[in-house]
Length: 90
Image (cartoon, rainbow, N blue to C red; front, side, top):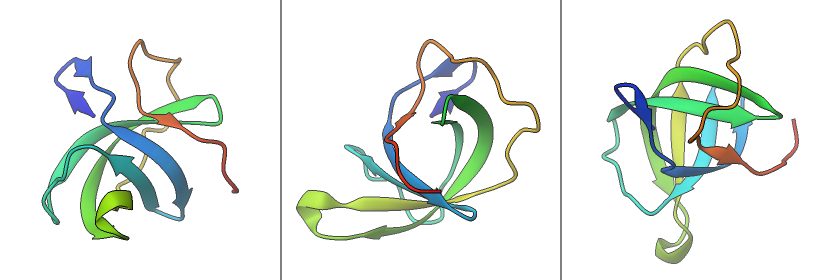
């Protein structure tokens, strides 16, 4: 998650399908809340805006669905702090 120039590891990215990212977080954001995020996947990093779409799953394994706005055109190099993704399908 981005806070001005600083980034914070808040989400563990499980995967992205279309414009929906599925992630885990120790924090519970409000459905509809918009967040500035930096996504790292397959060695590439993008800044974008994401809207909290839903929280799904059991309380002890809650997954947050984030609707992703358009990603920045040019991927960035690896930042000092970023949300790190697990290797998943497409």
